Structures are given as C-alpha cells and as structure tokens.
Length: 342
Image (cartoon, rainbow, N blue to C red):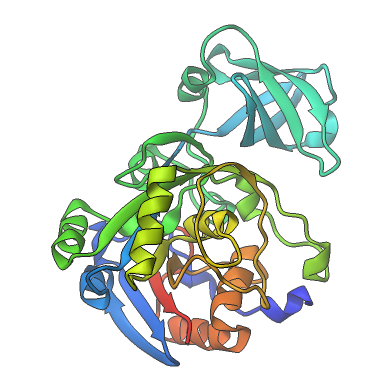
C-alpha cells in the first residue's frame, strides 16, 4: 500500500507537551460498530465487561539519550536496542562523524567505543569500564522524550515520573508504552472491582517507533526489532479467558504487537521470548486481540497503519477527524482511544 494513504493534517496545537493531571482525567474516544463516543479515562471500567482482560506492557523506560562528543565534534546518541550487558545499538546525531573504533565521551565521565555501523545507519556502541550500563545511564542520560515534544521544550525532572507507567518494572525501553500512562491506582482498583482481569507482558520499546516512514510503499519499509516476553502462565490465563468468551484488549500497540507475534493461526497465544519485528498494515488478520486502547498517532506512521488495519483506513481517518475537531490532545502525552473493530 502507498504510505501517503495514511497521511492526515494535524494542527500543531493538538500535540500535548505535558500529560493530563491527574493522569486518569484525560479524555477517551470510544469507537465501536461505527459509533464514536466522547468519554474520559475514568469511564473505562464501565466500558468493559466482567471477564474481559486488559493486557499491559510492564517495560520501564531508561534514560537513553546521551549528549557528548567525538573529538571536537558534538554528537547526540539515542539507544534503541540492547545488544549485550554493556553494548547497545544506537541512533546517532552527526553519525557521519563517527567511525568504528572512535571513542565517544559523554557527561559525568561516561565513555563508549563505536564498534560497528549497520546498513540502516545505526551504530553499535560499547560502554567503557566495568560499571553496569544502567548506572552509567543514570549518571549521564536523560529521558528519551519523542522528537515532537523534545523539539518544543527541554526534558526536565518531571518527565522522569511523567514518562513512566505506574507498573513499570522491567528496565530496557527507550520509549514509553504511552497508552498505559493514563492508569492510576484508583483506576486499576475500579477495573478490579468491575471483574476485569489484568495481565502483563514485557516489550522493550525501541526508538525506532518514532522513525518516519521514508519509503513510498509499506512493502519497502523495514521495522526495527524489539525484545519481548510472554510467560507460559500468562499465555495460559489469556487462552482460558478467551475460551470463556472474555475479550482480550491490548493496552497499547506494543502489547498488541507482542500478542499477535505470539499467537498461532487459531488465535492461541504461546509463551514467547525473543525479538519481534512484526509490521501490521491493512489486510492483516488479527488473531490474539479483540480490542485496543491506544493514544493518537502520527500521520504516515507505522502505528497509524496498525490502527487502520484494526478499524479500516476510512474509519480511522473519520475517528481522527472527529478527535481533531473535538480538541483531543495527540501523541505520547495526549488523550486515549478505545477501539473495537466492527
């Protein structure tokens, strides 16, 4: 399919630069059966049925952006996928100035060596010394806000809390599973009282989620792989819930992508541990999920392609036109949507 089919105009003032406070006061657009309703995140329990299952991603965002230099040249480094205990694949600003073997110096005495350059231009770096990489990043790194926020204001200490979910546990993401940012303990308690089950998986979201699609057709686009895990116990509970006619509702496109990666043609979910580079576009047959809670995505992005595959391209363009007209806030710190295919 042509990538320009997934384009739309978004006024710049719709991009949220800070989250709603409290988190669960954000708005929620509900699309089901051709109908669009305007609700709030706190309404979510009433929109679900006992026996439904919400599936969250418990990945934890690390301070994955580094500023430094190679010799006299200033560089910016964003980690996107771990390759070993002390090595990461990275996207580098001013990457043409970096060659394998170069020493990269960052703040707080942190340094790394450029090891290898991939065909897509990303660079493998290995941190010097024997301290855990996590400690080095805590010293020298900052939270990796998406470019559409970072270009409009500096990252600050508040982002260390705002850009993390309440159940973040497994360190390794360089982007937040943003649909989950809306959840608070009082909302989770209300979901439990409703009889809706909660399950978690882990998908370490990579910075590739923000990369623009630069090709003309979806067939030409290459997804960056991300590491994920679904335990056997979690897979068993999800399969039992579905057998009992409960709906599996992914909270976020990251949860959805891993569930679909782990499901067979019959829809049965298996335990999973490893990389996935699944790319979901219209024509894909969904096997594992019955609905999706997600934020509003960029035009021409792989994530807008994914929701278009779930709901239909024309339906999603109508949903987004309504959201723009009704002043919904877009992107990572914006409002949410709850999508059920017809």
